[in-house]
View 1 (cartoon, rainbow, N blue to C red):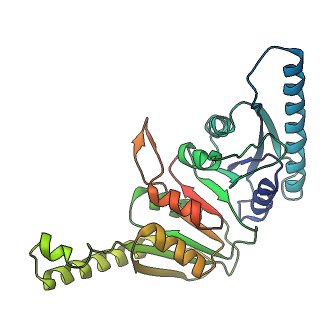
View 2: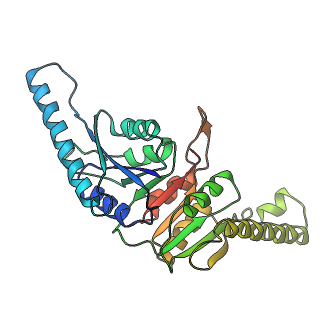
View 3: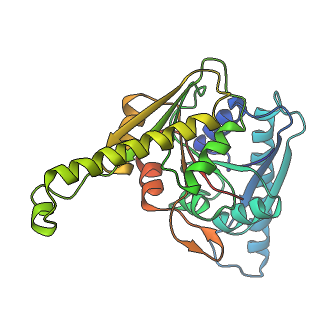
Amino acid sequence: MRVLLASDGSSNSRRATRWLRDFALPADTRVSVLTVATLTEPSRDSQTMRELRERAVAEAHQAAERTAKILSGRWPAVDTLVTQGDPQVEIVRVAEDRRVDMTVLGARGLGPMKRFFVGSTSLAVARYAPSPVAIVRGRPRPVRHVLVSVDGSEGSRAALRFLSSFELLRGTRVSLLHVLQRPDVPGLRRRVTPRPDREHDEDRRKQRADAETVLADAAAVLADAPSPVERLVVEGDPAQEIVRIARRRDVDLVVLGARGLRTLGRLLLGSVSETVLHHAGRPVVIARER
């Protein structure tokens, strides 16, 4: 397995580094650390700009080496890479060039590398990276409870395959969640569709039965999990329910598939994934097929 860790030396990046160090990766995993040197000033060919650029590159190398040192206890031969440019573009480009299986980065960063993770960098990487992306938020802690959102889509199947590729610790709990979207606003259904309540109730029973089938298929993919897999069916807004249950059960990791518009052969994020990234308050993996 190939993993790319994007780091700028900030406290958020250090949290992502510690999370990766303790995550249940296969023994043969190869880790690369990427730090992007970037200048906010316009590029001008002057002595001052050349000196600033050289300083930024030197600081990037130092940040990458410090990150590699944190990981060295587990992976003595961590590869470090320093590039120049827009962090969003560079992280996605390197992930593509190296055909990594997962990209890891902190949610935000305000560190010494010219505010590497300002604004939407993490979100942009989650949108455009060619393989699963782990966005680390909150205090890093061992992954003992994982929440996986499943809906039978290709994205959720990618999420299950992603999780099944890791060596989960003994005792790690996995909860599979399927969200049934609520019917229309009360009263509106009767004005729009004249179907009797009995027919409506039958539809709901069928949806719940379909949900149980989806969960059973998902549990079969995780048959080798170290603990029994929990199956949950709830009703409501998918994004809100994923966030609510992640917080209520205090899970350590949320895994869900990218599900949105496809452009240039790549599936972009949907609104559910983006909402969960913004509000879950814990590490989130957005899984997609490479």
